[in-house]
Image (cartoon, rainbow, N blue to C red; front, side):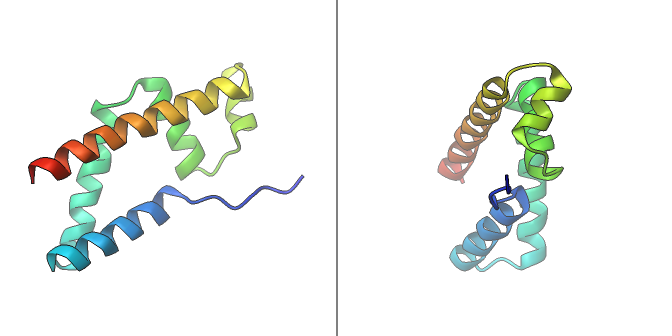
Length: 101
């Protein structure tokens, strides 16, 4: 079974940086630093340890959900749920930050 190509965290960051750059006129270096700080804070403050692990393995290390589930000895749906809830929490933080800037 072939793996569908998925949007990686880096792709999402690149598109967000491009959008922010377009709207605010900041240099790319400033955008990258802001985004790195945001992602770091969001992963450390707004998600559980399990969500952080699943998100990191899936988006950064490009592992399949089945692989992560096997490592953790849980069902694939559990890993998917951790990823979805973690992303939802990160989006909440993102919306909060964008609202108050």
